[in-house]
Amino acid sequence: MMNDTYNRSADEQALHELFQQFVDGWNQGNGQALAAPFTDDADYIVWNGINFKGRQAIAAGHQQIFETFYRGSRLEGTIKSIRFLRDDIALLHLHGRPRFPGQTLPAPENYGIQTLIAIKQADGWHFTAFQNTLIQQERS
Image 1 (cartoon, rainbow, N blue to C red):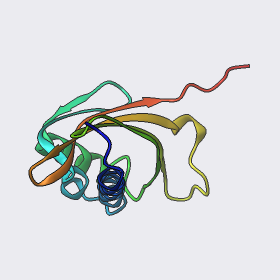
Image 2: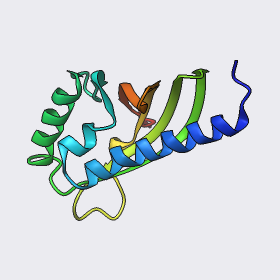
Image 3: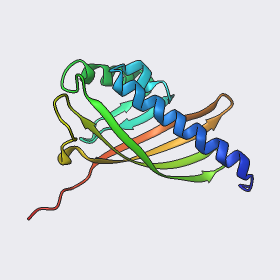
């Protein structure tokens, strides 16, 4: 049953902290730190459909972009909603976007909506699936 308000609040706080670890890893340009909140077998699908399978692939893939195209970028993101599917599974929706060096605001074409699935294990919450989709801009 899902009726323990205190635990739910603690779980929501833990998920916010886990997401902050992810953002901090990006902002440090550190693939290992970014991937640390994920399970060993996580699925991570980026905006263009590439699917990184597992924490190590997530770390390596991000380290590559941090050293090239996304060098010096900052991730701006917020959790828009958390829905507990069970006491040990949560669905999170986020809005996030990278801001590149020299930009005062992120470019609108980089705005994305993300879905995260988190699972609660013996050692706490971890992300096990991530999907990033660019938000389509209205065309005139």
